[in-house]
Image (tube, rainbow, N blue to C red):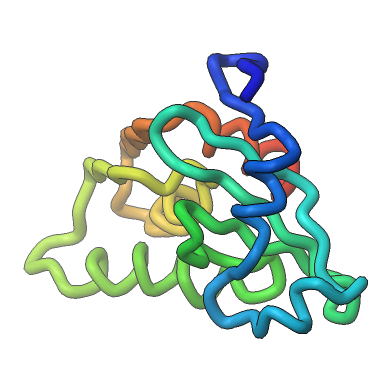
Length: 138
């Protein structure tokens, strides 16, 4: 495996074929069809990061260690629940919010919609998640 920008490790061809075998929720026959293609696959040293393009739905999905994080057509369901539910169930409207993870920025964006919030600090442990999100989910 070759080391790329930011310390990311690009898998060699054998690793790519082996890791490409399945994704949660996608039947193997469909994955090997022309409907799905991976537009990004790298191991950051901390986790496997994959961006999968679904040609039929014209959407992209982000997977971390083969676990679906969100798709660009349904990201609002994930991000809104992670942001609005906690903020709306506090005794007093929060002014300062810490977001742990959420390297794509969607949760922080929703948190900033609350008028009481004055400051948001987001901590993402894997810089490659942030870079992948900026590139594929602007």
